[in-house]
Length: 275
Image (tube, rainbow, N blue to C red; front, side, top):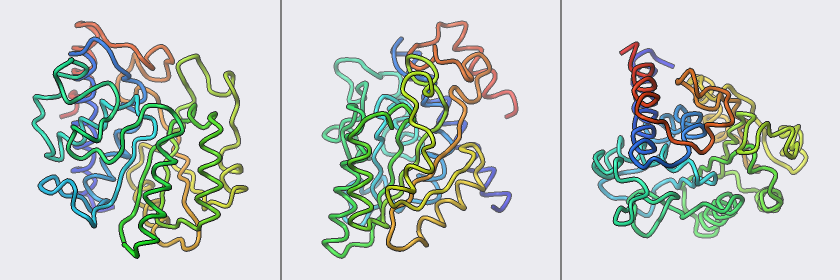
């Protein structure tokens, strides 16, 4: 990846992390850990990979994105705000009764949200529907989704995996955010879904394993997914929960907990230290 593009996307990822933290802190509620772990992927998808236009959020030929792990909505909202879908000031209204930014993505009220999500497993199923619709209509748009690693414990994920492979949905790319932690602790202790790479491969998917915080690897994965024909692509993205904030990193306790004022200020200081 060229240096200028790398610097731009790195800065956008930082902006997404800061925006997600601001939203969760303002709401005194939300899911910071998994929001921080997907910021680099969202940065690449929205600012490099996907054909989307905030001036025309519903344009017919746009690429679609579904946040299957809908509880990490703060990261998606921060991304949409950074892209220009709505004013960044709205991030401070997260989870307020009169705000469009509710605890999970809402396609009816939030510009840029293609699917309402929250119940784990439903997002990837909706993404499959979008992908097969494009195939049936002869449309060229692609569909991207991000799942949680804990979410892969849901049976519906594997029904969707069967469906996508059966119908050869090579216009579908699913990122699995493998940070190894869910609300109750280590994913491998709660309900071990490993080896995810072998399981997706056995279900008929093209499988790529990457470092979720390496933009070069994210770029290469997206390119390989576009070039793969006849199979959907699963990108197992090995990430760090709470990435970028020292006291949140690799801590399951930060799955769904808001920082207090002191913690928020420390998190902001850490994320902006190298600016």
